[in-house]
Length: 184
View 1 (cartoon, rainbow, N blue to C red):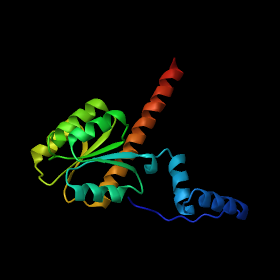
View 2 (view 1 turned 45 degrees about the horizontal axis):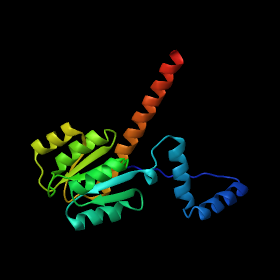
View 3 (view 1 turned 120 degrees about the vertical axis):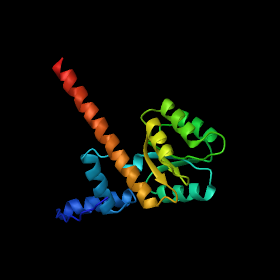
């Protein structure tokens, strides 16, 4: 995601209040202001987004969890049988699922997850890419298909863009609902 730098001037009293608020919330002024701007523009704040990572390789699962845990609420599962009950009882924003899992395949997990939670966004990762597999994953409902080793920065960018699209779609549905009810 491209970033721009801005400079703002605020009154001394407001700055003092802002500084106290940031100390109280254990955050930097920059992070606090970015969050305020994101909230004001209707963007989904990633701190509130939850992610389920389904990956059988412990090192990859833990690496992704450690990379994402400072920004997202992260839960992990080592296989589909472990993941599906988690999906049934929680509302995850994003599911990251490996294609090759012991027991149920990642595509089976993806399909069952979409049946349980149709609004959950799914990203498929694999070390064994093929065009057929990518097409099948997209038909089932994956928003993206990434090849391992996945660069954490790329995964985070895909997640962020997915969350923004979901937020925009939700805002459009809300505004359409308001227009429809206003017309009645």
